[in-house]
Length: 331
Image 1 (tube, rainbow, N blue to C red):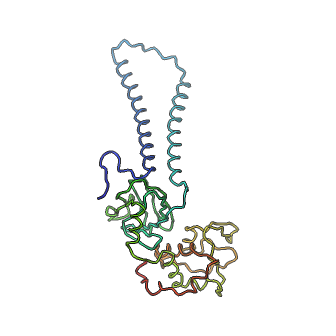
Image 2: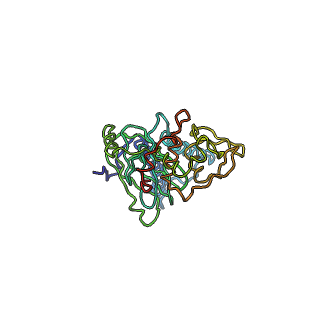
Image 3: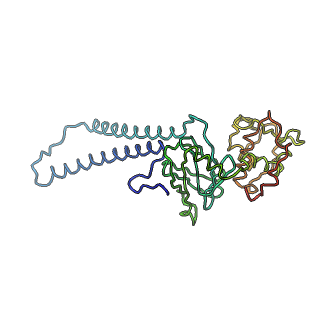
């Protein structure tokens, strides 16, 4: 059963949600407090200085400058404190205190496709282990969507061609809702799914229940060979192209004299828009795969490149059973 809480707040499933709730209550309390002070002053003056009252109406001997400075400084400190509080909550969300479990999320009209490192995938459903740091790497295949997890008080817009991320740790098992919070077309309201937080053992059983599947990196290896990438990027190739071993996470020199870190976004752009950042010393001859690869296929290639190790035997020289047993439609 989906865990829902109709009253003031939805169910909280993380420490981050508690922090966001406290920030909201703090902002609400300060705003209400200021409103009460202002309305109290208005009613006091309306009653005390009403027509016919004998109240003293002689001018107050208060410096206007001091009054303005005091009022401005007081409100600036109050809302400056709220800003600092909110910044702390936002920055704490992405604190990398441990290596996260990375899960890919692709939005499209009108569904969410979730891809797990072991090769498992699901639609409009996200399963995560309780108490473990999880990083969602997200993108869109068509229009702007917004991945919203009310139980975590987290929402992130996803746009085509760009990787964005959400990092969180859950503290309460259960099934919750996930939504698209950005109008994305006629069936936007149906873009709803389930966010499941499971204990570690249950999560392991859930993964095992899907059977043995080729991982994202293994699928990427098959796609790498199938699309002819090995003809240029494999060791010993006749084409002068950058080697991909140990590429991920390292600086890459570009032809304009600058450097860029080979992160997931760089690999994504190098596949779909190879002329955007040309590596120094290489000719811009790589064809673009934009419109020829799905976002999920790009994810598989990115995961394969991330897994490459120059010290290990070249995986392209080994038999690849995936080339026969993985139909193109499974990607």
